[in-house]
Length: 238
Ligand SMILES: [Zn+2]
Image (cartoon, rainbow, N blue to C red; front, side, top):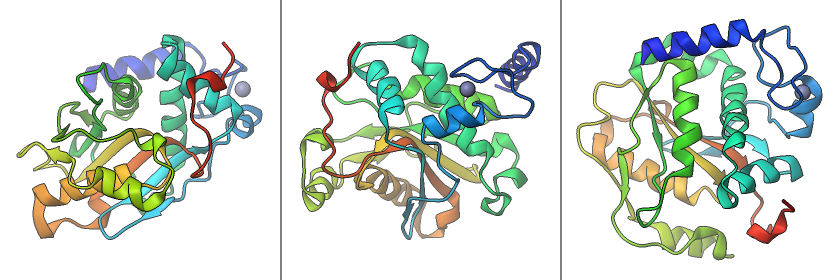
């Protein structure tokens, strides 16, 4: 894992670090130039969800550019967007203020876990969540969370309370995996009501017990979409 991170860093150094979106040369440790940061709706690093169990972060506010990347990856298998999507997570995380404490934790004590795919599908989250983890030298386990029952697709449910009841008690955290880590980061593509992230937090809490603090668990998504925004594959032109 550590070697992978070194290789990534060396590659970045050799490439003179260019903006992932417009390829303009960058002078600092950013993934995107200021103009593209604005176009991509990159958020100032502050949580969008604060519950007793977790802090939930969204890298961007939903907008046409992020929509193109996310839906292109999700519905049109556009592999070339994976770098942009992981870049959004990386950029956001690089700008996380020190008081969240991640700069003090050794990367090997941080574990990244993606929200798993439904019904045995190939995981789309896995592709960019793994790159995000590798960038920072964090450990990564794609199989830590699993669905214990079928749930309806959240984006087809338009009422907030129904989203929460749809997903309640549906995720399971494999026992033993998270023990020994100081911090856990659960990664997903989209958050709207936070229902999925809070269910994942519940599964985490169920596994580690009452010793867990909110600071132990962070959730990170590529974007947040306001409830009621249409979510259809046909919405983007390819
Ligand atoms: Zn740019």
